[in-house]
Length: 355
Image (tube, rainbow, N blue to C red; front, side, top):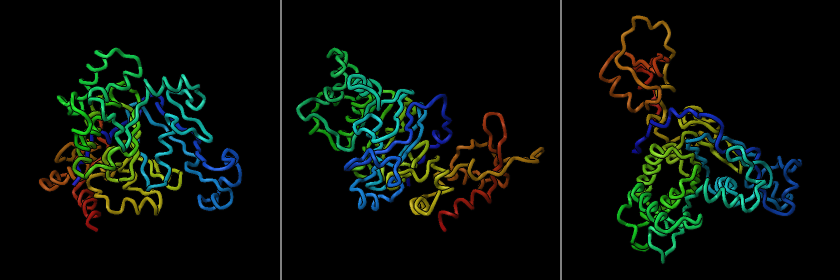
């Protein structure tokens, strides 16, 4: 069973968005720019292809990602999620729309300015590691700093420090073929961290790893996020991975967002049958929180409680509390009582998994 990390469920965006996409399209095919804004834009993907020879990989997508947030985009193969993330650093140019980094539209940047953004502000971790086989691990990690013109001793020192951060202390003088797949992906993660980017993009980075190593890498990302608080946009086709990592999740289908919400919002209130089918087998007790199942704290003067709990405590963690006491639980946010959870609410949420 997955271990769910409730520390991030209480994430509250602060300040302006670090990344904003506004009405972003990516259309492939002849005269692709003429599709956006035309009646043909409303056609289904198959109808558009048959009529115009064009494919709309991303359709009119808008979203904001706040500083320090982990925003996960998930969907089946061909849903457009990888195309979308690659437009944020302009590995793919949008057909239409804006991509804003700290309010600056990267779509309008000249080549020099775009290179600077890629070198200093945004890093990317890919599914395929892309390590240089004839360079030592420390040199692979330091490559981004080398491109920036950082002196050798300084960049190797930084690379060694980052290798320690991702659990590869002592491996700097090895070569890629001496490392396992999971270790090589840690090198890819270290390489992305070495330039101290503000924004990290992950394009299905763990999908080629076996399940145990994949879980370890997910835990590594969560640990790094607690320590470094980077802004992360993470692409995956795995719902369990999305629920584990994301402060918010966007579910994508045929190039468009179907639903955006916190993990508990998506699980508790799927937007349509497509999302409902996705979350059908999700263990709700490891995702839903006290905030989701609580009742308002009304008329509670003089009421006794078994325990005080955070609104972001997952239901699974509430089970022993309600089993060991007949008293309800008081949900506290700051110094304010915001709700009450009783045994019936917890058991109902648990039984929904069984049903």
